[in-house]
Image (cartoon, rainbow, N blue to C red; front, side, top):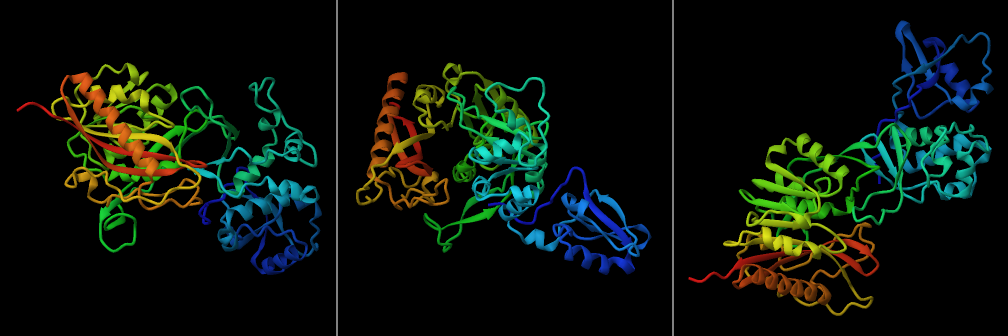
Length: 477
């Protein structure tokens, strides 16, 4: 959910009645009695000893004050939210302001479509695809039931309902309630191989935003009660991403994996990120894990632009080379100590490339993402027996257990130890990679499963997993 103490920008300013201080208390009582006072904002002191009391704009026509109470109507350009407004949960504030906007047109059917959660990226709020989608809201967007008729451009994009470009008063109210200046709504991801989002910008001129991850990393500290062997959470800095929400995906459900990646011992290493996107994992590898250099591969031109800006924003552009295009055509060989394959539902098409870029004489570690199906009735959990080399640095805090956050905040409780399906997938993947490496180089390799991480519940009975696989050549003496 949203933090409650947020700014409440109002583009046109807040209407207020200014009067002398000696009349302020009487004016306040009069406004409250007539239900004209806007309790969202504090009164504001003005030069010359006057004060301004915020009032509800939609009820100004009802204003009738005694002639002996001199006052002037003006607008407060930088209103300060009242203490009550700051304490009010944003979802309730949104509902209350929409109800005030629509007056007698408010209904239970409308209330059902008002969102209770959303994503925030700076001053832009990204609503879920089912927000404000009912027929009554569509009619409101067209100017019925009291809202102004839309001013549509001569041409609007195909496949976009006309009301999405309409109803500016509606979206300005949403922005004001949620402390934003821009509003967008996401749709389903396009099946174009690039996971291009269908996002409609409802208020604002562009979709470029900045997202800050809070920089929490895993560190050794016993007795904290977290999964694993003596792990704790410590705050060590931030990663800043910039991207266009209308053209690039951003998955907050991957935060646990980004934090884990940030804690890996990558000092001095060269990494290849085969599916870099806007830099989900490229950035924590560079900024926090200490990688010396990253080769970032991405074929979506919009994501490439966002990745470039993000690297510059974080001061690490000189330690990353962006390979724009299909990573399957990557010409690199024998350069990587570590390869990240962060593509779901499967990164299998990138496995041959990952084998080619690993250092042929020393090998390295692969981080392989995959969606694994889990039966409805899980078998009793098995002890994890996958850690082949306990001295490997990546195993130091795993304790042989699968971590278990879910994207929906824990709706589905996962077993603490590896499920049989996950273990079978990890072992089969290790065997397949071992064969690819032996075929590529002409000598045997050893693959060792270091860790299996549960990133999130992707769908019913489907889990997004990451396999940390160590790959070492068995060279002749």
